[in-house]
Length: 574
Ligand code: DQQ
Image: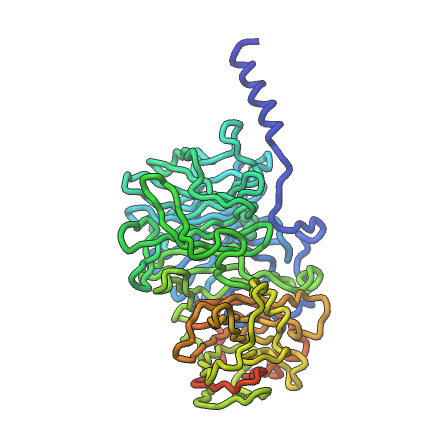
């Protein structure tokens, strides 16, 4: 045997050794993934103004971008069933991020490098303006590899057709780079360093250390793995859908992904496969070393800051050059049972696109629904300067409370009666679970009861509770309590919670909730703490859904101002 053959045998043996079973990050229901929706679909939980296709399963938002006056949103989609499987990149376009037109899927299995699935990835706008996509393909050997796709016809603003160059894959697990072939996915938007080279991150793990692997390229075709990941964190497990981008220290405008320098900080986000939630840090990106150092203002692990403390995962941001803003989109999975999903004929929705920027404190991000959504505000009802006594409830009438937007600013007359927070209570979700909306407090719980039935047997409570913490410092917790959200029993009713970093000097606390049949997407303190819940009321449906403001604390609180609107129905992939 000549040397060449010997080498070939060696490589083959090692390839077989390295090829592992496909590790699905989602539950696989083999028997259901090709079951098409039937005619008895359940419609009452379909959303009115959130992003969803007419039917079937969706998960992660992929490669959002703005090109020639058109927003593009791709997403993980099963064309054949209402559970995860058969994944392709479905494609929708919009001019306002609210009305969407569905096009044919943009990326679907075609070659050995993605024949078993086209998983998540991101778009990069190259100098000159042409977008390219790097995504994870599942190859013939069920390994995760990274591929590139480019528009077939860049003069088409709808970017309908995408082609995959013959030099795919760009990045693959090999015997040399020690990459686990089932933990190597979800490339970020690429950015260019001052040396002109491109960089991209790929989510991975080694042992239980989650990491963002770094690749560099001079020409966007030939990519070399850097010796060290950009960043990693022990104990966090597989990092899915990493995101890495600059934010301005000075104002709320968004920055294009390659921007760095003075008055710029960076954000690194990871979606934790083990926890099924995300965390992020704010920090410094050191160009020369190609490393990222998180600030010590928040934890660099699963207990760290979150975009959203509820059902929100696999999110992605993009820079919108049309309005100089950075926009965040996330996937909101269902909280009902798989059999209900099959009966519904669909599963999964996306968040309302949120503008995202660095809080002036520099310690965290702030999010707010894009302004375009306000065009959907219809019939309005206002309340001003109203006192809400301890233990009382005020109804917000005259709007369609199953499809609404409500903004309220509360006046905290006095903080005297705030409950003392036990020092061992450091997990806000636990605090909210122990002290739900029906557990009386001092200052709070106060907030809104949404998707509530007339008798309030069904209700989702979104509220604040103010505590006295260490050194008499006030600690504010925002909760979304789903325990009474439905009379149904086959639903996940987990209560969610997050701390709100506010000083309460002016005694004001604001809350906004976007209510959309089975979604309650809430923004506390102007978007400092966000919580999304998926709920499935049985009776608080359509015209029978009500909206209330409540106060279950011993202190009275005031409504400085409340505005609620019926939300109109945009055209979403119809
Ligand atoms: N979903 C995709 C993966 C990603 C996961 C597969 C996150 O690429 O890691 O549909 O939800």
